[in-house]
Length: 215
Image 1 (spheres, helix red, strand yellow):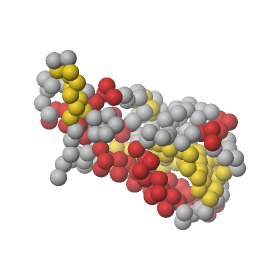
Image 2: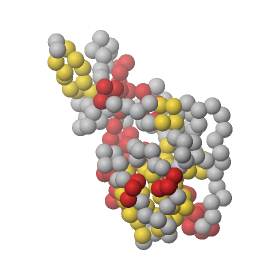
Image 3: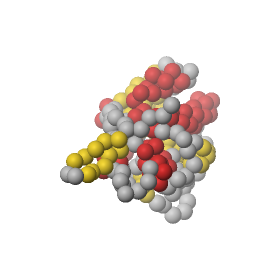
Image 4: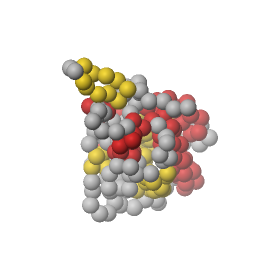
């Protein structure tokens, strides 16, 4: 089985690349990781679009028999960018993780698997991302085990119902309102990346950064 993986250069998932390869090596001796869809190779069995921020044209998707996309929402609700973050900001604790087939429309491919995952309310960014990685990897490995036995795609169902979308997050979304309490904004503190887009507030014409850690 030949497997290729797409992870954007700026993605949090890059720190887990060795872990991904370690798990997938039980099923394939031919694994490649790319950060640009233009580098995808032809005639691969599976392309895993693990954390990739660009729309992939069909001419690149057809290079693989299957294109898997992990997505953290109860599709077709919550399509788009950063679904896990947006749901935590809405104070959700139990969140659906979905594994779908990539399609020409954003997050609209058939659904292979879904599962509900609990995100503890005390967890901060790195802990949340660790859960995100582990649960998505479980869904991917579940698919690969079935695929390796049959080499046929007999799984999945088309999405039904109304779609909703989350917008792309930007550094401005990490702004703290100094007139509100910390507890009322704790979920925002939980999802900010201390290194790449830390929490901040503006006062007296200056910008101040806040970084959160715990013991």
